[in-house]
Length: 387
Image (cartoon, rainbow, N blue to C red; front, side):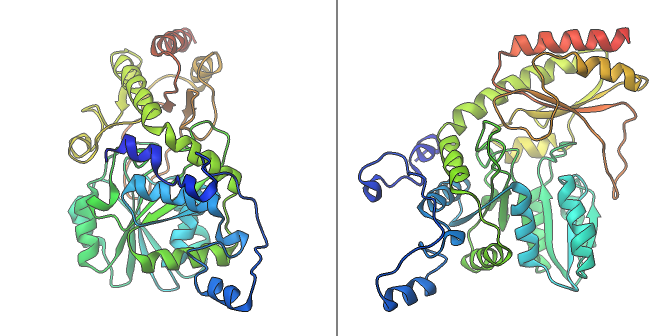
């Protein structure tokens, strides 16, 4: 079946809920068992059935099944945020003496987790150039257990050659994890490209309405599933059933929403690329973005998130005049909701040099009319020039 059909049916089992179309919200801590035999059976099968609230309820399982179906996985685990999904993956797979390769364009808190708490546990991190491709083989150590990728990077939007990186990592005995949030699992199929674990901040496009915190990790390997599920339960990480329900609701309209985000994002990116105030537009679907050719090869679409760099010379006061007066673009963190956002960026690099001197801004294209958004940006750029 095509993805649009799968998204409408994955995780739905009306026969288990008296014919109700949508899985209801099950809120639970204690689960009762009618006999000692049933309790002991549930304990043995605790990763695959209702056992105790922290292990999941039918609402969790429905969301996990839908995410696994979306990404082409066999298993998925719901976590209370995208960052929790990253932390669960790293804690489950790494121990003292291990080494991780972390892409230099990764989500900032992921890199800080490696260089702070994980470093104190004796886990070494090396940042690498996201455009390294197959040459990542030269960075592998005997202790390298994991290569972390993010394609495209959620600030600077380099599109990594994930298949080439995965081939090199697997040849050296390492696993590959990927932050797949930008594509929402719809426009990039991670497991067909060599990824072992696909991570999403479901807070973003899957939920789609900026009203829930939710993360997921999906995989095809049963051993990896049990290792991560055990880590999540042991660390006390448990997504709320109401948030999983909101994630399920979001999945049903994901394809229709993401197509709108894509169309509006491209419209804004192309308009901005022609503006004299703009140095460059970092949108994977445009040739100006590093890795554009890889995006053409490996992705089936683009979402509404991209960045722009202003030409050098605009003051901070001019930048404030631009963003403070915008009417339709809110200024805040996260993205993936129905509303448009704009965010000035601070670029943190260790393995590479950020080549631009001007202010960088990330734009999330919401579901508003594209012409209205352009008009808002046009007034903002006029204020930028005046200031």
